[in-house]
Amino acid sequence: MNQEQFEQIEQQITPSTPYVKNVLKAFLVGGLICTIGHAITYFYIIFFDFTEKTVGNPTAATMIFLSMLLTGFGLYQKLGQFAGAGSAVPVSGFGNAVISAAIEHKTEGFVLGVGGNMFKLAGSVILFGVASAFVVALIKLILVTMGVIEW
Amino acid sequence: MALPICFAILLMGCNDEKTLEVNNLGGEEAEEVKAIMENEESIYSGRAIFVEDQLMVAVQAKPWLDYKKTKIEKNLKKKLKESFPEYDITVSSDYKLYWEAQKLLDEEDSEKVKEKVEKLKKLKKEET
Image (cartoon, rainbow over all chains, first blue to last red; front, side):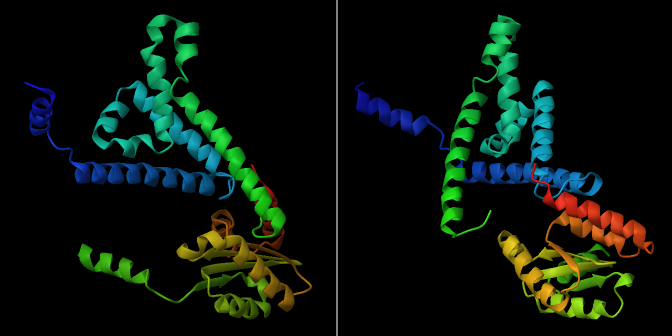
């Protein structure tokens, strides 16, 4: 069997990826997570002294905390298997990335294992988040100075 | 049974009429504020609170115009300033102020209203 034949057989056997189904699942679960987030937003606005401008931080913190708890109980993995990107793209995916890395390296000890590896995945999120925030703020500053938009 | 209720809720969304409310301390000026808010195309709801020399207007921008909030606030404030130059005017499209204004609508004690308006003005300035 040469390589071409092998590739042909391989393509025949490989089941086709259900793109539409996956996209729909991700859309529904991602939308559900964001709806919960919005409910938390209104909870903070109505019952605490937060405005629409300031409510972002506590909402993100709560969503991350909830997904961390779910990861610890082993439930977020199941959701991730079902929804794919729908559960990874919202901010709750960040909490999942931190805690699952911490659990994975628990056996290597607390300092070098958990401490050193906790931000293995989430570290890049923080790094590129900070870097891109800097660039976006710079662009906005330039636009404001030029008088195109306002703060 | 559930179907008509669903329909009613759905159709309420298509309602073009604005819900405009002004508190009792306003007096004659209440109608004027209402007229100004009625002419503002980009909002679907508004509440105005008069207390002593303060006028707080909390509005809700139409969903598709939400990104233009600051501009809407500015325009409305300018229009109000022309009609009520003697008042200290606060205009906000923030949901927090809108929600709290609902509670102030029926409050009779002007001292309490004033306190609350001052607190909301401080909250509006909060950045973090």
